[in-house]
View (spheres, rainbow, N blue to C red):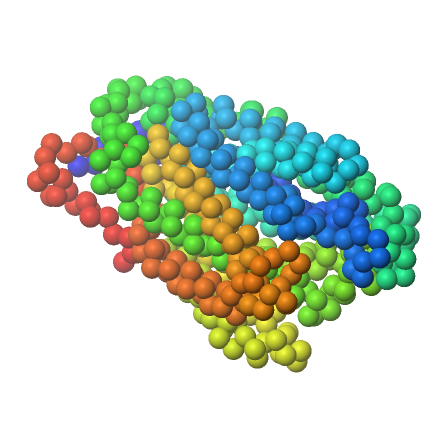
Length: 539
């Protein structure tokens, strides 16, 4: 039997879209802007670091980071993110969203700047300090996942909630573009001032000493937009749902939201007191697992499977860029010119594939629902992965490589207009307020585990079967064709696990989590409740 909802929560659910909604999107989204900026620029930075710190006299090709160093530079950020998602997700439910929110942003800002100030000139010293600060940068970024999603879901109205949460996540697209554009501008400016010959002309002179400043500047600039929003994060009131349902202070929740919504909301202390006895089960208790166990399995498994496929794209990017002539062989360029060419190529891919996918989701998620978008995304990712894999030899011919690029781009368009966005949105909507941030953090951490497998497991798996044809330092693998088949199977499993995730479109958060339900007196009464068996597929 449904309990009457608190007036303050009802006011949030039915509120018209106002300026504060857009302000919240920008404030919450800046963490994701920094996240994407950092992930984008590190691919530029690793190329340049290889030339600066791992140059070998007389080598035919420019220096590159050894596999273990490259894995460490990229991997520590993922490990930090995973840890941050779990820790700050839990802390957000214990201390409140607002109290923790400023910590994550300051950690990102400080560690972004510190990464660029990595000490010394010796390879071991620079890489060690860079890895240290990138771990803590990842830790801060990880905290932003559950907190930003939860805050946006608890502020939004139920009509446009999906679009608002997806818009926060879509700020990643602007971070990628900003990173690319800044890297292009910086490299052009450095090239004009410190021109250098190609590596094959003069290996030593192709990397000018000033290039050491270039990568540091690119890494540090990402902190500026995030730092600019710190004041506004501190000014945001605690979400009404946390204050009323977790802290049990309906009067404060009504006061805070009256200012935000610019309407008078009456405090209902008596109703808030009624909430104390209901839904008192603990996280991972038998009651929690009965109500939300399958939902948590659905959100963790789909995010895990999605990120395996999504982060494996790094395997093929260098081949694609070379195939379409966007990036010539490294030895034909100077160090700064290589930064420019890679930044230009990645910016174009982001502009025409990654960013549109995000905003298609924002535009349509509240019209066709989360379930339909996620199912469609996984379906097309499966189709395109198998279409790339089965006739792989056909795509390797020079005349057919443009087709490969188109298919590849469509795969990641449907990742963003699909599960990459919905796996972020749904966990912020379907769990009770006192577990919402924790459960989102657990789901996101499962995704990051998938990202580690996608980025590093497949780096080894996709190596040629012939040990004489593998990349330097890597053992033989199963080859690119078989790796693509495995990724197709991973995406197909994503389709199946999507059926565990309930549709939350157009429903209030309390309706989804069952927080406005009376505690049933018996199992018989529970079975008799209408809608007890929550459908996972929209009718």
